[in-house]
Length: 404
Ligand SMILES: *[C@@H]1O[C@H](CO)[C@@H](O)[C@H](O)[C@H]1NC(C)=O
Ligand SMILES: *[C@@H]1O[C@H](CO)[C@@H](O)[C@H](O)[C@H]1NC(C)=O
Ligand SMILES: *[C@@H]1O[C@H](CO)[C@@H](O)[C@H](O)[C@H]1NC(C)=O
Image (cartoon, rainbow, N blue to C red; front, side, top):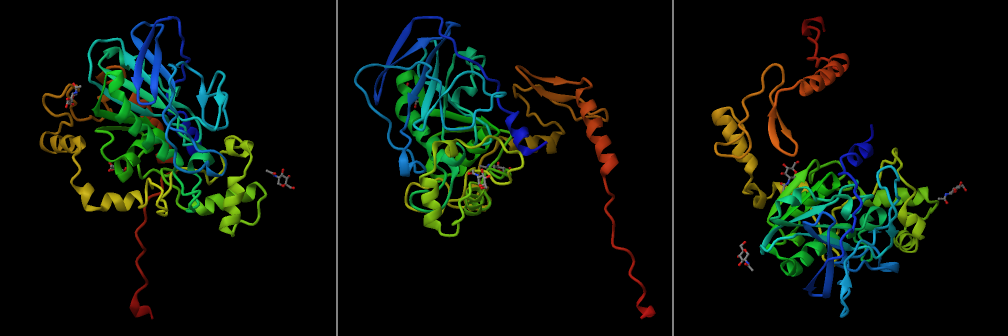
């Protein structure tokens, strides 16, 4: 299975939003008044498709986002199904969408509670940086705790979000700069919805996980969030940064029959004037060795997202002292043989036995299981291993010098 499939199927289930109720709640944000609706479940106010930034268009379409629009008449924050330009893969994205270049909208889910200053979860959607949209993930079940606000949003994808030429007009990482713009928007506006800008957790899975992990090492996102949940994907993952973005851009241009790829300004012009169809892409090519993901930028003075490789940033002094709860788990395991520290709400976890159990199940409730599930899986991989494993060889004994 290609890495594409693998990452796509980690995406969270799709769900259509319903608006059974006709109750509205109005709040004032910096851009003007907005009103959202009570969700059909009746426990949640939804403010959907609020523009948090403006995607530049025309020849500027690969640059950092611009400030969002403002208004005086109340903005109806209802689901307009806005998604960023992308190839819509029907089997993972159902329903109708309104695809448009100016696609930078956020969705705010506010529990129906009188409590204020609620914690905030900002969730970055996955989709290999090529597809998806904010509401691909709906935290409705999680929100039943009624004590935090969830924010989802769109960011530019594929060529549109991640073409990286190192020129002033196509510096790279437009999609990541959208994510930073969203976090700034949350800082400015979330209090209006009852959220606490000093308690923001960013989370995501797959490309969303790589995104949040990259946000933790980007100077441009410093101070905009406080906790991170990266789920399957890290700053060092194979496609969390392009190893040679210029070469990728050249190779891709060649597949589109553009030949003058070695003249950087010709190449730039080619991309700046490409058709909307090309911007959307031709779909998922599982054999395509290059696709557009975050990059290490050449600093061009336009609010860079990342100008050093994640690896060198992690090696730097600053990160050596980073506090990690994983360290506690390690330490606890070393000292006691149990990974879960005393007093934790996670069930205590004795060492795994020969039958590969017990294991921790991370379902709706976190619980210890000792079913055969892991055993089956382990056997499956062990069989493959046994069939294909090649014993490491030591070098043979050289012939004796005396034979010379
Ligand atoms: C919200 O909680 C923070 C602590 O996280 C506190 O500093 C702040 O004053 C509170 N704000 C409001 C409006 O209650
Ligand atoms: C970056 O990736 C590495 C390797 O997966 C991981 O150890 C680290 O926790 C990640 N994030 C940060 C901010 O260090
Ligand atoms: C590129 O050129 C070939 C040969 O003329 C043609 O078959 C193909 O459709 C062209 N591709 C694009 C994307 O225009």
